[in-house]
Image (cartoon, rainbow, N blue to C red; front, side, top):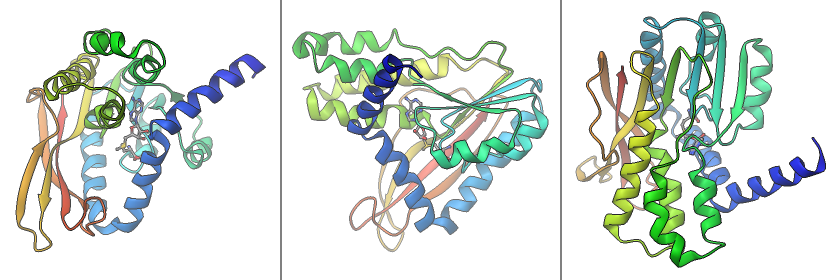
Length: 264
Ligand SMILES: C[S@@+](CC[C@H](N)C(=O)[O-])C[C@H]1O[C@@H](n2cnc3c(N)ncnc32)[C@H](O)[C@@H]1O
């Protein structure tokens, strides 16, 4: 790596730190260790669904969007079944980079799945904030991620509702967007994500709702996380992910996610 690309890489990494991408990913592993028993069911269901969806796909190139810690990915099986496995994430934990060395056909691609929106939002603040704020929502529509050429199977892996969460938290701290503008932005991000998943070559696993419960498991609130209508696909499955039963994610309440997987 020459000095110019080293510097570029460093600046990009600093941006991801400031926008909390690193701490968010570390948080996933921390919570998994705390909640292992509750999470294992969700992780198994995710892996089983992916393998069922893989059955009908051509076994050339599989691309995984939001691979993270590979907790919910049947990597051994995919590596055996497909010629090439490409893991896509904005950050690949070094433990994962080490782990995949044992597979000859697995590579890690560091990329922003929104197609550059992270960088755009971060740098908009450094320039003309007021002017950029107005164009932020319309600009969001023009960003899209290009899948690697000749992709045979794409797995959107528990990432669709994550794509906006960090961005919206960051925007709320630095911009004055109204609730309806924020809602529009989420719509654009989710629509753009679905648009890039090719028909008959995809599966998506996503949290649809966040459910808040008391200590004694009484539901006291449900917040929708996906703002667009998803197709029924060829087949689907839904389950509850007991994300936080120890009441550490939100004070004094439990947080569960209602998760859906669709093959299309
Ligand atoms: C909830 S995790 C998905 C679970 C993941 N499969 C695992 O086992 O850790 C979401 C992942 O999406 C990644 N991510 C979030 N926004 C992203 C973006 N715009 N582009 C690429 N990756 C992103 C995060 O770094 C994280 O690893």
